[in-house]
Length: 143
Image (cartoon, rainbow, N blue to C red; front, side, top):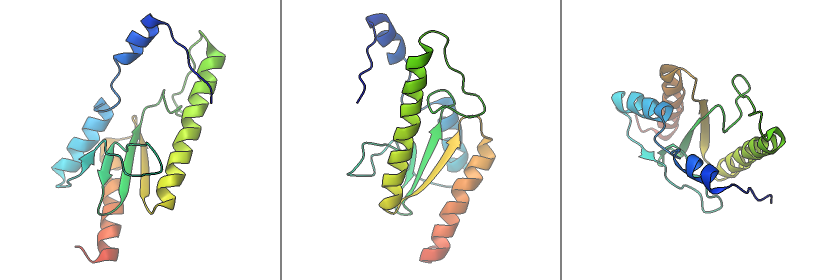
């Protein structure tokens, strides 16, 4: 495992960014809540992984992730910083690999994983989640 070293100024700067409650995540939560959906936020769901999905529907076993374009290296909007480009490239690739590993763990444990990007339309993202919830309700007879 690679160790990421940062000076104190960089550590303070990065510490200001929130791990949860980002604007895209809040928008999706508001939309789902407005549609009558109730869920948990930032909840650990697996004993085999430290991953904490942004939105969790535990009974339906649906985990929703709202991925940021920079940190999860969106194909459309990703850009590498010019300073330390090699370091950032390996860091962001490691993030993508970690995401894929965590998703595989959740799927193997019976979770349905939904990933949306921060730039996705909120209504369409909520539609994806609702389709999965409706499919679960039809299968289990919880209409």
